[in-house]
Amino acid sequence: MPDELPVDVNRRERNSLNVPASIETDDSFVIRVRNHGNASRVHVHLDENLSAVASLEDTNYYVEANSAQAIPVSVHEHGVVHGKIKLSAGYGATTRWVDVKLTEPDDAGSVEVDESLAEPGGGERDTDEERATDGAASGSVLADRPALPVLVLGALAVAVAVGAAAVFESGLVAAGAVAVFVAVLLAGYLLVR
Image: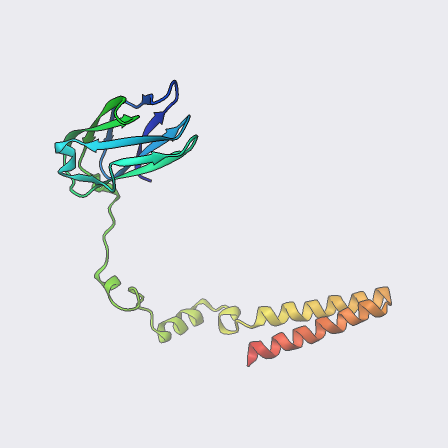
């Protein structure tokens, strides 16, 4: 999740701006504008240092009354950079500056990507023969016969339905048991087909 710079508009009075003094991040971040009053326009400007390594989609944002808006700041070059963001509300009636410090990204969380991922199949190297060998090596009955659990559950459903028909001695329950039996036969046919 990207870092956030929280900005409150119209919190105390019309066109007021509450912002933190600074933000430090190593990548792209979001300016999260929360409007506590009437609809307002917020103008965002990156100073020269910051605009050399980061960008905005737009500079003028309309924020609905009592709502929030995310303004993404895309960092496209990494390195240590000190800059400022200028925020203004009410067509310049209120202006605030935020110090921004961009740092080098931490490479501790990086992941090495195997070149085989570029090959068709997404790096999957198992052949059908290897998978068959793995299933046989596990010694699992289910690996050899994946339809077995379905057939066992179907037989159990038929047994419960027949038992219920015998206990309740009702034509309606017997009809239900027949419907379960037919459904299990149909499922078994489709499974082994």
